[in-house]
Image 1 (tube, rainbow, N blue to C red):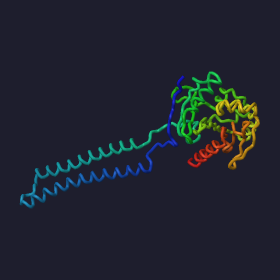
Image 2 (cartoon, rainbow, N blue to C red):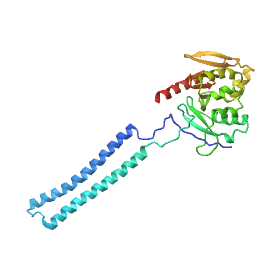
Image 3 (cartoon, rainbow, N blue to C red):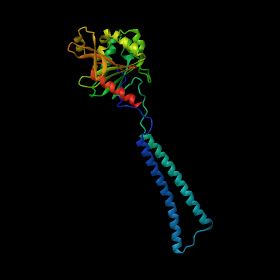
Image 4 (tube, one colour):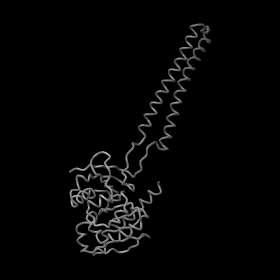
Length: 305
């Protein structure tokens, strides 16, 4: 069971054409080609002028008649041929320059909602025979080594086929056998993002797009009773879950002017929490610091659009 690995280093937005710097280089390159062609033409004229000057200085008669006309014609034809060859070579070089300096086009996963450092694919058809198998397969991806501050996006696809559809929020929760209110399921959009933030202890998160803030807010309050059971194994360690001791009571906390609902263990450490970035974006994670980092990334994405 070897899911397809996708690893892309980004901080990323994809481009489909040359940048301003590239265009500046192209203009300079075109100018160089023009200078070469001008010099070629000037060289031919100079040769002809030198020949005329030599003949005058030596007292030789200037060529006239058919022979002189033939020589002039040959010079004109040579100039035209050189100009054509030079133009063709310049155009070919220009196209090659553009090809080499234009970044390759890449398909951005629909589920990528923030800028990430890398992406790893997971084919759920090979990992979703049971809830436990699915959780284990995801944890194998999220627990891979990751530099502090880097974000890994876990791209869940329905099969290993090229351009396979990404897993919807509803299918994701169904495989997890989440005990979630049906009204909340209906208020979730299909698009969601599963990721991990690198650190001494990696932090996990979900970003879910929603269609109705009111329904999601009410539905999340109802889901709190089962939230630790449904998503806890994806976020917390086995020891942290044991420390909950059956506790499912969430607490209101405000940090940096952001309201959130937090489930704390017996030691007062956050196990799972959720908050809203805006009326259309729900964030579920396991650390308050991670929540603020995700919010900063979402703000950055909003400003860049």
